[in-house]
Image (cartoon, rainbow, N blue to C red; front, side, top):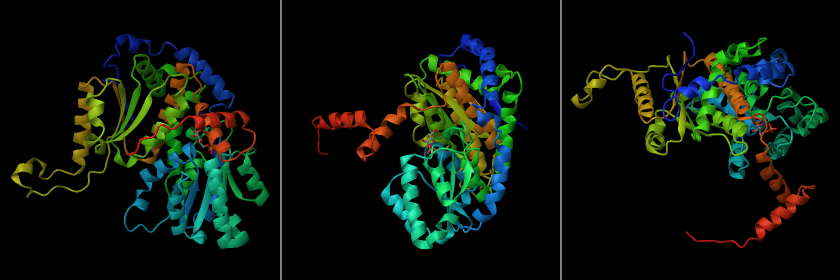
Length: 446
Ligand code: PA5
C-alpha cells in the first residue's frame, strides 16, 4: 500500500512527448537551490525543524485547552483554511446532528452579522479563543481580537487572559506585544513559515489536537514526503512533487490557465479551498500562473463539470481519490427491476464508479490529468498530500521564476482599506482613493 501519482493521462491534450522529456531539464540546478534554501532555514515547512518545540508547546497547552467545550479561532487565509480542512476531514461529527463533543469555530471574515451570531451563541466561560496571525497585524484578525477580548473581559473580568491563546511570530508584531503585555499563553509560527504553508504547525495543529485528531500522524505523513527533499544532495528529478511542478508549469506554458483540484474524497472537500489559496496566492505573479478550481466529486458532476468537459480547453486536472474509503450500507435485494443492477451493492460503490466515469470523461475530453490516489483517508495520508502539494507549489514557482512565498499584489487592497478606515501614513493611497471615488458613477437599477 502506498500513496500514488498516476501519470498515464497527464501529458494529453496539447502537451506532448517533448513536454514530458523536458520536464526534468532544470531539476539539477533547482536541487542545488533547494539544498541551499533548506540549509538557510528558508523552507521550514519542508524541514519541519520546529517539530520538537511544537510538541513541547502542545503538551504545555493542551490540558488547559481541552477543558473547554468550544474553541473560537480568529484568523484568515493561511491562518484559517488549513485548520478548517483538517477539522472537516477528521472531526466531521461537529457538523452533524446531535454533536456533543468539542467544536472549533473558525471566524475568518468580517461579517458583523455572522460574528454576532457566533458570539451570541457561544458562552465565554465555555470558550477558549485562539487568535492566529503570523504577522500579528492583519486587520481582519486584530479587529476580531479586540472585540472578542472585550467579550471575554465583560464576562470574566481579569480571567479573560486565561482563555486567550495567541499563535504568532515569536518576536515581532502587535499580537506578540499583546501576549507579552497580558502574559497570554502563546505558540510560535516559526520564522519563514508563511501563512499558506503553516497548516502543519501550531496554526492548524493546535485546533486539530484539541479536537482529538491524530496531529502527529499528519506530521509523520508530511515528513515522509519531505524527507528526500531535505536530505543532502536531493534527487529532485525523482521526487513526485517536482514531477507535478514540471507538469503544472508545462501546462501553463501551453496556455492551460486553470487547474482543477477534483476531490473524490468527499470528506476532504475542504482541502479544495486550502489548495486554491496555496496555489493562487503563491503563483499568481507577473501575469502568470493558473487559476485553481476546487471541485468535489460527485457533487460537482452536477454543477461545474460540464464546463470542465466541454468548455474552453484551458484546464488541467489534479484528480484525487482514495483506494480505501468507507463502503457504507448495502442496497436491498428488493429494489425495483429498473434498478436491479444496484441490488446488494454497497453505497460506496457509487463513489468509486462515478470517480472512474468522470476521470475517463475528462481524459476523453483531452483534459491533461494527474491522478493522486491515496492508500487510505487517514491523517497520515492527508499530511503526505499536503506536503506533496506545498512542495509542488514552491517548485512550480521556481520554474516560473517567481517568488512563491510572497503575495505582494494583495497588499494594495489592504492598504486602501486601512486608508479608508482612517489609518495614518498612507498619503499616496489617500490621493488614489479620492480619485477613484471621484469618477462619476454609472448606475443601473435592477
Ligand atoms: O498565506 C498567506 O501568507 C496569507 O494568506 C496569510 O495567511 C493571511 O494574509 C493572514 O496573515 P497573518 O497570518 O499574518 O494574519
